[in-house]
Length: 71
Image (tube, rainbow, N blue to C red; front, side, top):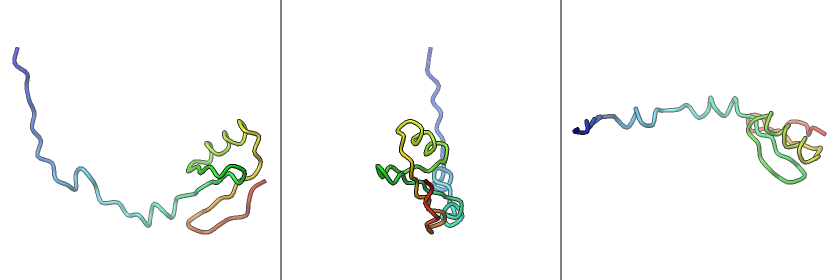
């Protein structure tokens, strides 16, 4: 039985669509554990880390500016 082969002619824009980095950065919130310097991009991951390790202090950077530390 012969194998069917498919050939696709895709453009570079299809493979790597243009992304507005500024709009992503506006929504990005980075959480940093101040006790071990681990970085988390999702608040649920940061919360799980605090629960698992017993660490108590997070620094949050929102849109490039530091917010008050959570303790």
